[in-house]
Image (tube, rainbow, N blue to C red):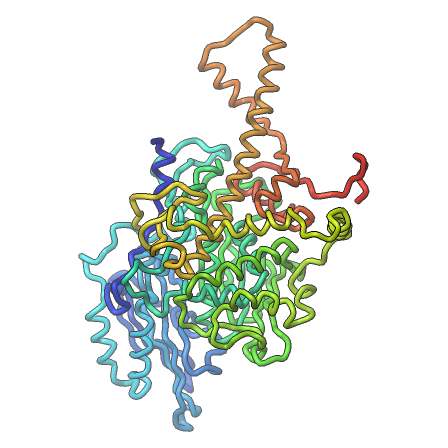
Length: 617
């Protein structure tokens, strides 16, 4: 077995506890932030490990704007790129001298080296309980002392890996192992890839009710078919800023979801030749005006050659309640504007709005919409582990976190403007082709649409034959993986019925990523081989009977490949990747994807209507 094959069988493996109260991660700091009528928010109490300074940014990040409108909230944030922060906010009525409200937040910092977000969510319930106790008497800090003594980091608790190797923005470019040349001049290393999918915990084990992945059904329901253009933006490693409202826990969870769904599966991590490439979009979680410099630093100038700088900028995903950030177009590439909380009671369903710079709105393609309906139908086979109440249209069952199979038509019919709000209008060429196929088939259902549905449904099939083990957010890798479309550990349970909806969604998107990468790699390898054969034949004809040694021939072959031609992607290739052959947005997506991961120019052919070899539309 080759080194690359052995690597593909491993991925980040996070072992969840047998119960949410066990295996709590040690904390590097604990702090209490109080609202004072004269000085505003202040850090009233703090403890931290030696060398870790709790600057004033902690109080700003722990209490984003707008929290005074809610009673309780959980806020996730990053501190100094090495620590995940989690704070529990509480707001209770108080005396008039306290402006009729007592507001405080209890927070912790956990090393990111413990896994995604440092597994900080395991402390969520404990922090909420601490906040409820302290709000009764903020001057009694003994509960905080007890918490610190119980959970502080000791020497034996130090993780075996540095946090930067797992979670820092530059983690994927700081690796020094297994270096080899790369076409873009950077050392080529192989980093840990992200697990394709998995159950949140192995059978018989519990999972914290605050695990961010439990929000995946809510995420799908909130964005509808817009989840696909958002996924594509994340796959292109753009800077994605979600502007929402308090409470912020759910939008912080959405940040986690976007990062996880757009991760690069271990089965395809070796296909793109360029380095350094991140295996996931870096999640920043809650940010504010104090983070503007950090947000701007993630920019990637498209006018430059790919990866031409030491810090090329591979984007991030974050959320904020500071509307002012939305007008600073230099801080983001993709802006997601969430509807206000009161929109949940509106007669007409309110959807998020996704825009690029200069307010160019992004919509789902017609193909995305059909794929979304198939996905929602197929997900009805999977139970959800989520305990969270999810946003839903007024026509949906309030007891169901995700609509049942027959609700797909309800989704379409519940709002007559759904299509024009979320979906790209059908092009004249696509409409003409569809009308012609309907006429040619005498009104029968089109075979290509049946194949398309089967293609999409296949992404949720046969998990049990491919995976074993449990989903993991820790930096430790599993030791086995099966052979499948996207190989990685993590599918627990007996058959598809034993798999929860959340890991099924992760698997679905990672399989989709694997499919796109494999098709593109096949196209590029095939095109390069043909081009090399032609150039070699021409060279041999010019040189006559002269010949070179084996080492010289290899050098000549590499020199020929350096003058690489544009990658040609046809309509059949687009269909194989599950993309819309009629959509200009999907063609642009492929062009940018090839440029980012392969450093090549792509010429993507769109569908067209022809008659007797003559193009009509």
